[in-house]
Image 1 (cartoon, rainbow, N blue to C red):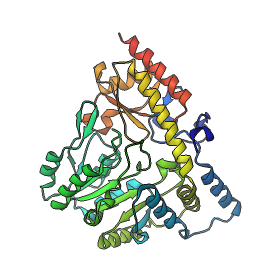
Image 2 (cartoon, rainbow, N blue to C red; image 1 turned 90 degrees about the vertical axis):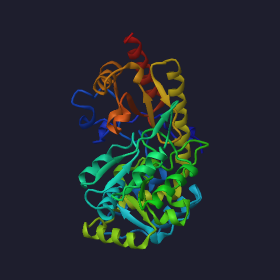
Image 3 (spheres, rainbow, N blue to C red; image 1 turned 60 degrees about the horizontal axis):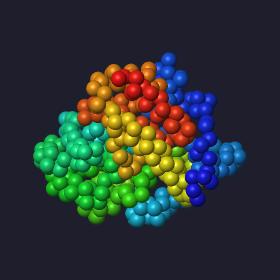
Image 4 (cartoon, rainbow, N blue to C red; image 1 turned 180 degrees about the vertical axis):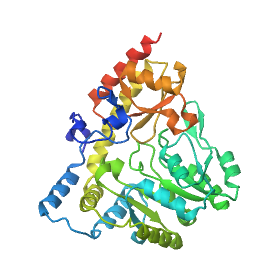
Length: 394
């Protein structure tokens, strides 16, 4: 099916529910008029099969304690096999409330206080909070940006991984916010360095389904048996099907000892209950949501083309061409504004509420992250506002 067969142009007032993206928590008390493009979710209704499954479950009317539905794990493994060519053993899968929960538990279980955890900034800002709140040491190995494209610094990684007190790496695959979909060869090089230095890879792959043509997602654990054993994969359909507020996540752990330890920790923290609506939403999404996702990706690609075309006439703002995710990394460094001034400029002059690049690490200074999973009309109007605002600076 195509984007035309789903109504991605429908303008839905998300403020009718306590959605985070347009909420005053994010926009501020005076920000209701702004273009809300900071929070990483879509403005589209969930896939029809998901909505139908949730309605059916609602009509049952009884919402007592439930187990994991028999069809849920096969739905996940079937999706991974057919969509990404990754064969996942159901026995290796644990449920989790969300991806960040898995990252935090992995740090708590498999590193010691004071140990270093490597990140590759500019990177998802919650990585920093998880590391700090677990009393681990942030080890920064920044990506290398050259001619508008980011690559990993393998020499820097080798140096940092050699420290015996640096024991884990948080991988963002695909990478938020720069939009890289790491190639198999890139992941293999990282994997070899981590294996050789006993650094466990914990891979956040929540954006794995959202890639553009020519840039296939490679699950880290699919690289081979040794890398599967030296990794923990964190997955969720939250981004893929826009069901972040009504779904849970999965932790895939091939190593038996680590998996048992993780399972015991889930039990200790009582992170092992099941939500009826999350279960039916996830199963329906993985079994029947493929056509909707394909159409959504086609629509988002169309939105990206609009951004590309509009910014071509605005040399002061550079698009970092994404290979995946619905998040666009924009380079405003030519405006020579501090992070605070850039945020103020975008809010007051362009009417934009986006995520400051600086929160992703100092390497994000002068950048901003724009969410383009919105209606094309809304995006086009916002880009016009941006052009007028930038022109007004000169």
